[in-house]
Image (cartoon, one colour):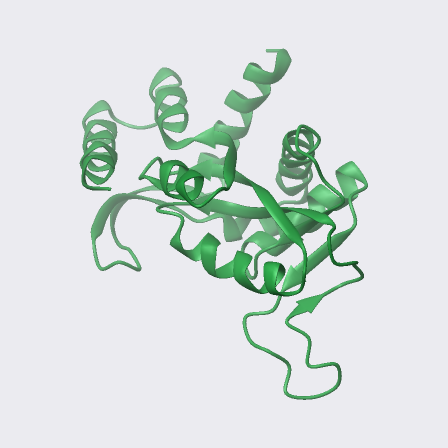
Length: 206
């Protein structure tokens, strides 16, 4: 299997194998019960997967106007480090809270106001948390126009972010993940049908 599409299919199968794509009943941050769960925090225990993700993210970043990349703590930060190493992009990251000592900075790293930053994260659902992460970057004088994530859950984030002036780029969509797992026979069809129905309902309600 060769080419970008084949690489993506292999990555999806690997993500499932390491438990990053799981099926069952999971309570989300929103309180909803989802028939699937994406846990990309596990990739840090698999250097080969992390390196592959970094290369794919770097490829997407290269298509954007960029001076630096910014990783969103916590899950997105190791992926951003991998992308930085793969693509040679200088890295910054917004702190979740202002330091109460020392520099009291909200954004760590070396940068100049006016530089263009591509935000990196693991997954996007409705985009709300991405807007929260962008705020301190823009407050520090950085310019954010593009976000790159590994997986788009396809629950309205692209439209919400675009309405605020941000472009979303996803290496994978959750639909593509479902399709590959179905084609590979790794997940029962009825389980995937429930997962697809959940995504469709969430998209309709976005």
